Length: 112
Length: 114
Image 1: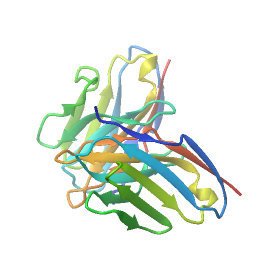
Image 2: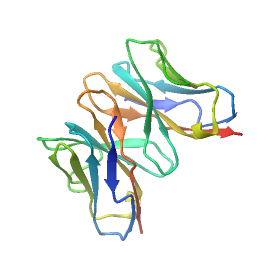
Image 3: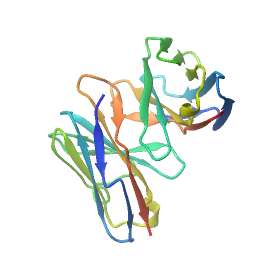
Image 4: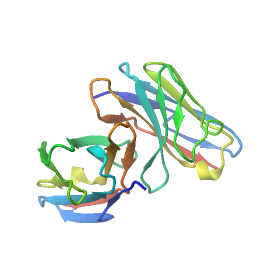
């Protein structure tokens, strides 16, 4: 069956450190991946996405890496700030479908 | 991106009653989706609601329990029928812009069933 999971359920970092959130996916037919950030009491907020024909994509303070060989996705946050504290979800979309399958979520806590 | 609003933002309901959740987007979109997020858990797709066609439900979700309307390109409703405490969740709508492949989410409706 299809599944998307995260390696770490919680992560606590110090302000200014770099954070890495990992995600494993199982469906080799997935062609598009998204990272979302969900703050308490809010809906998921789009952070960054990557297509399966790419290995890396950078945004503002965030980088997503995709390793299709081992079906692994990671989100790197540079110079983590207290405002980055949230639950982060990875999601995959299977080729030919609009359906997103979400991972379990990982809570990031940034200590000042 | 898109600006998406949901009403109500939260509600407390009695078991056996029904609640209709509204989702409004500030631009015309073909694809809208409804998700459920149970407490402390991830998002699960309930159904896809494309304008001009019947909603498509995922395994474990049925139209009698979660009827959906999609009357135009900017609006959709999800009804949670004959509620039980197990229906206590956050219900989220999302849209995929016709010019984009990303799904954008509304703020969610927090439902507590007593």
